[in-house]
Amino acid sequence: MRILLVEDERIARVSLSRTLAKQGDEVVACETGTEGLARLKGEQFDVVITDLRLPGVDGMEVLKAAKARDGECVVIMMTAFATIQSAVEALKLGAHDYLMKPFAPEELLHKLAKVRKLREVLSENVRLRKRLAHLDDRVIVGNSPAVRRLREIIRVVAARDCTVLVQGESGTGKELVARSLHTHSPRKHEPFVAFSCGVIPETLLESELFGHEKGAFSGAVGRHLGYFERAHHGTVFMDDIDDVSLALQVKLLRVLQEREVQRVGGQKPIGVDIRIVCATKVDLGDLVREKRFRDDLYYRLNIVLIPVPPLRDRKEDIPLLVEHFLDKYGADEGVRARVPKLLDEMMAHDWVGNVREMENAVQRIIALPDLDRLDLGRRGAEAGTHPSLPAGFDSGRPIPYQEYIEKIDRELLIWALKQCGHNISHAAKMLDLPRSTLRSKMEKYGIAEEG
Image 1 (cartoon, rainbow, N blue to C red):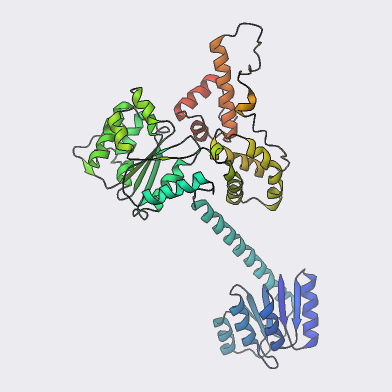
Image 2: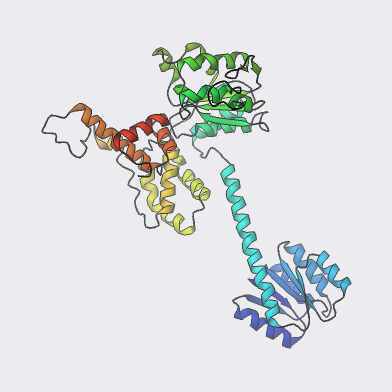
């Protein structure tokens, strides 16, 4: 620590300076209060140790100046003439502690050890608060023309209480768009309820959306409020709306038209004041033409369409995204020094998994200190127009179609799970698969959950 010592007695000043220096502290010693004030004006100190009675400017003035300069500065008073009144006054002015002369050096060192621990705790607390603030500050990172246009659309649409359809590939940040719409809307102080239609099993989805009454079905031991009711006055974000069955689409249509829900087992509709934002990873218009999505629901959802660009179309944002994730995961200077060597590889990659895939790559950089190459795989343009055969197949013999497909399927699942740190939900999103489908495929191919 950097310590300012103000002591007019030469022997005490020299002795304390040596004692503190032996502990590894940097000590600046002054003989008078005036000199101490001059030092405080131009320099930064962690601790100020000052005698109360000094020639000229006294210790109380030094205390006031130290706290005015830096409220976090710790001030320890020393005096041979302590009174209750002076001690109370010093503590009111912000003194950390009081030492009665004469005192053993060990007594001062003990107090400084406590100060050092306190500073470490406070420093860690500040660091964690910044980290939490950064995690909560879910922003759309980038300065490319595509991102600037996306932000402008969000700014305009957020103020209007209309239904929004967000369209983009998996991992592009569709939920960030929805959260940003909510944050900049008049509903920002109300609930934001987000869920994925592709993660919740079809048998539970209706109950989770609309809620249920006690006894509505086996296991319904009490009333359960669905997502729509929980979001009353706020925003509902429905991700993977393209995974909803045709039967459930009919009930969703009523919510959009009437802003009413009816719990499973309930007898009457319940009004809800909500804004609905949906997200899709495919073009819902294509699903309508294929009769897999109701056209009337599509038109209700598609009031305002917000397309989210894939990362390959805004590669100029990659350096900013890398910096964002390094901050998010608390990367140290050593990790940051390695990033420029990997940036060319990152800029050349097509990022099929978009920002989510890139976030995983940055986590890998942080976790592996000796990593000098990401091995992101060849891009589509470089891989050629003909598929390479997986291990175990010979181009000179007939290739059983089903066996080949299953081999490729298994390798793709293993790759996606590794990319996502064996997080099944994330891997399912990366592959555009329902979580239940991914699990059944893992069981089929004997893929362990932990790799």
